[in-house]
Length: 285
Length: 197
Image 1 (cartoon, rainbow over the protein chains, first blue to last red):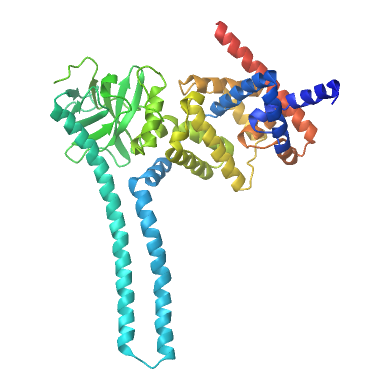
Image 2: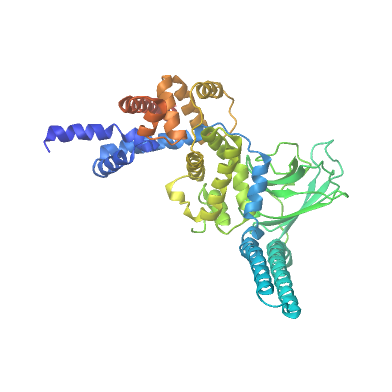
């Protein structure tokens, strides 16, 4: 290829770099650009700028609060019980649906083709009934197993907190009520260890919330507040939450509890019902 | 994924969160959802223009993170960028499966102008950069902004753009290239001013 011709090709390919970084090149163009990028540092540098531009475009969409049903369906899809029982129960149910008519047809065929023999027929019906009962029991066991798994996970967190308390190094701090007028007699206590991410929050005299609302726990770290989880108070105003924070609890300087929608919020939207400082507290040992 | 050093690295909280998701900690996934749910949903809604499909695409996004959390490599990009890239592809995949392309001409550009002056809603600097880019988009000729929008947010290639817009292929390529060059120039200028000031 003559140098002039090669230069023209190079320019043409170069002009596709922006579209390539946006994902807008057709397959044949994509191949040409990728080959060119591999051997042209100038083009690779330009591509890096367009990639950064494309990445920033991702953030140009206006954030929109998703519908509440999204978090609910996510929770359902990722619940510990959602995988195991499904894989056990579905084939069983399918088998039950497929098998019973087939056996029944075979019994009918036997009755039609042979002389009436009541005992074998009754035995066949009994077999079908027992089979169906067994399949139902197996599916129930699968569902119970998933519940046990969820309880074991919850118990694991609680044991971790109790172990901290048992080993001595833990913090027990009072969490008084928030601004006057919210709930002056509400009170909370947090049990945690500075080196561990688990925490156990107990709260009393909390106002009972309307349906669709829950208490959300926030851990403060400077100006940032992250959610530690949601809980509800019972009719007596008593509520508790065992949580695992992203960092050891010694990294946080405050804990707040606010009233939020039952699906949770991305940041506190109401004044704290209870809350207090963790930073500077003396850990017991 | 290596266990993060949460004290030495400011992004270590993200790494710790992703490690928990890799270990199938459901509360960690919901923390991720609380932090980025509105950004993910806003992005997929912009692609799909349908709340039902957007909800499905947003769910696809978080479920992919749930099942493939170990694929995030902190050395190759921020968690928010990785998550939004997954969301964009999830939405475009769903759009292609639905065999439809949402209308993106006049109404889109109107909403672009309207949102360009929206107050700051998120303190994250990446989001602020994104809003700046959105503002720059409103300064482009309408047909150039339109091809960029369709290419990026609806995943259309040159030939698909030509067919959809009923423009000659060469016109599509020229308008997309010119629009991107202008956007890049404005963007680079703002970055330099920001670095200087």
